[in-house]
Amino acid sequence: KNQVEQSPQSLIILEGKNCTLQCNYTVSPFSNLRWYKQDTGRGPVSLTIMTFSENTKSNGRYTATLDADTKQSSLHITASQLSDSASYICVVSSGSYQLTFGKGTKLSVIP
Amino acid sequence: DGGITQSPKYLFRKEGQNVTLSCEQNLNHDAMYWYRQDPGQGLRLIYYSQIVNDFQKGDIAEGYSVSREKKESFPLTVTSAQKNPTAFYLCASSIRDGSYGYTFGSGTRLTVV
Image (cartoon, rainbow over all chains, first blue to last red; front, side, top):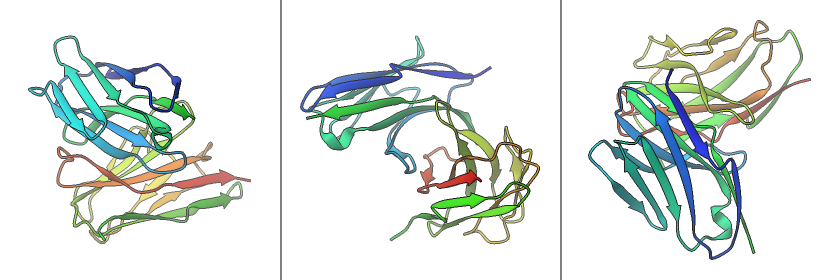
């Protein structure tokens, strides 16, 4: 069964600090891995999409890494802002219309 | 502005009633999807449609129905057969099979009263 595990479940950090969220997956076959940001009561918004051959992809203060050998990905947030408070969801695609969603990491950035 | 619009944002249903959630997109995307999100769980696929007049069941289709009469619209009906309908419902769309990512709507929160 395809699975995506995210850690930690929740995280509280001070404004301005960095943090790293983890995603481990057992999905086969692998097509791509995506990170989404979801504000409370809103739909997810795409941050990055990474294919098998990509190790790192950045989007502003967000940097995602992918290790396809160990089936691990991370999302690093630099110089956090209050607006970064949200749930971050890791999603792995195994082909056309086949997505497996993680449960998300809830990040709270406090002043 | 191109986007995907869900309405209403909040919906209350009495037990035994059917309700329909609206999803409209002006992105000219071929595929559309309905997901259900429950607290502490990942999104689960209800139905998806690759083209007009065609749709496929997802992992949790029981108690739900859809139609795709227009490319822009993909309404979801939550029927009285759905025993636990209280949830956050998300509609999404994509170019072809979604390899380039999905665009999500802002969601509809359905509560059974």
